[in-house]
Length: 326
Image (cartoon, rainbow, N blue to C red; front, side, top):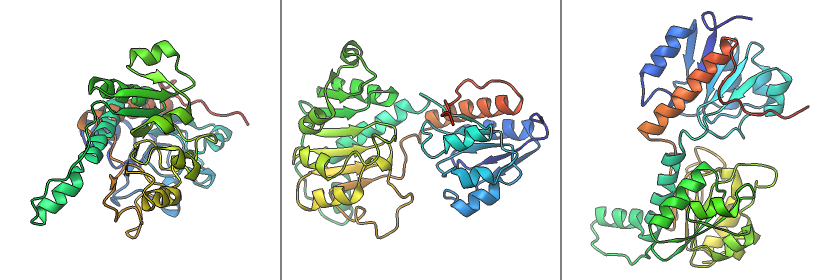
């Protein structure tokens, strides 16, 4: 098996090395060839398959590494996700081909949590709307709501959910959360009270999603879920677009069953220009920017690079993703 010195690596993550340019130089010094995504957007399926031909490892962004893509790379030995989520990687296909998949747990937790709280403030005080109106010549103050004293509901109390809970509690919010892997004492330590999914939906003024995409969570926020929320409530999604049925969210907003939503991730990224949620004043959309801080970028890049080079060098990575049997 070849090591790092004669390996070819594809970097599809557009933010790898942006905050720490030395990481790119380190990668280029360690391997024979580095190919970067220079398109300014995620690679499409055909583009990804073509780019994967002849590479031994990938520092992966948000592209879909499905069975077809993985099959196009017979030399591929490592997929190092520049981020936490691995729902875009066909883990079963990776296992069948002996490919090691890694991720960067915890590297972007603080950054994503800060964006989630920021989006809550933006919704509560209608900051984007007031900014746009002021730039257009208006000088009209729009009444909002305070976060202090409101109930923040969290679905998922992992690293990001925990960080959001602590911030929300410090702001004077009541925090309720659902996570079957968290004990009541752990929830209390982060300033939260455990509740069922139904209780979180019904009780939250601001409901923030921090769940992975699984067969149990995909399409979780559908018409029934939204109907259970308070009409004055706001939805915040800095998790995954697949958690939300967007047409159901649109219908809920149109009939006034929800006060607004802030979405850092959509099912199709980037969205088409005519995406119906983009034109609404009660919806804030950001371009999957949760991890985009200098600090998170440097931490993710360090972890992804170290694990990629370890696998290519025949050493065990620090953060391997468990692959399914079969």
